[in-house]
Length: 273
Image (tube, rainbow, N blue to C red; front, side):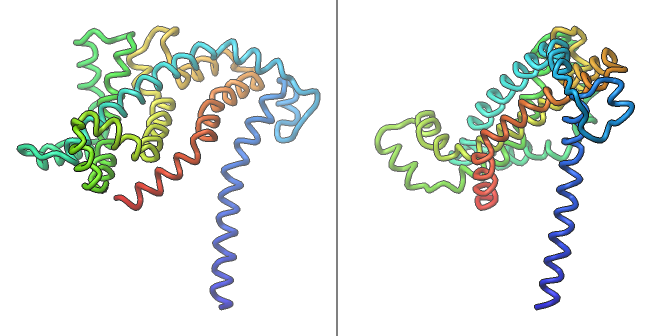
């Protein structure tokens, strides 16, 4: 019993230490965002007065266009990924057709290919299609690449649903599209919500593809924008860190609003898979 208690204490101590390591950089980012250059140079690790709220107004002017672009890119990508993934996963899970299993394994085999290996041919394809400096230059790769993992998860989840519900819906005259929209999607909201949040995180934080494809400043998303304001606010760390805080707020708000759905999706996915 003493050994078990000691082990739990050590584990809790490690978790608390890791939690502190996670939270401290966030706290420091917020504290620095309220400092001017003199306060940053003289006392950067503690709260100093007066608080310079004007840093946030300056940072907002600099990055508001980039944040709008990120909303456009991530929003369209998530809708496209989830719609296509549901439409692809449903027949792979609930319908019978020639070479179904082979097609499914061919799709999920793409998960084993690192995305960085496809960057050069992907960029060449974007140039050939004339998608440089267009939204399609990022929407297309994001939607095509993001749906693979979603199809893998949704197919497993759809397969676990009770067959009796599908038979009852078909006996009532529902077609396959009606079954998907009215039965499968409502039952799969937690896992769909979880996959949607994961896709938002991946596209919102993506840096390499946007900086390759979107050369126009008015089209660039927030990760590229943070690089630009890093040059603009090279000696104004308060405004720079204020921009970092503003850039992180949409994801924090998203997770706060969708945390319940996200946890339910993880729990249901762990059981179904």
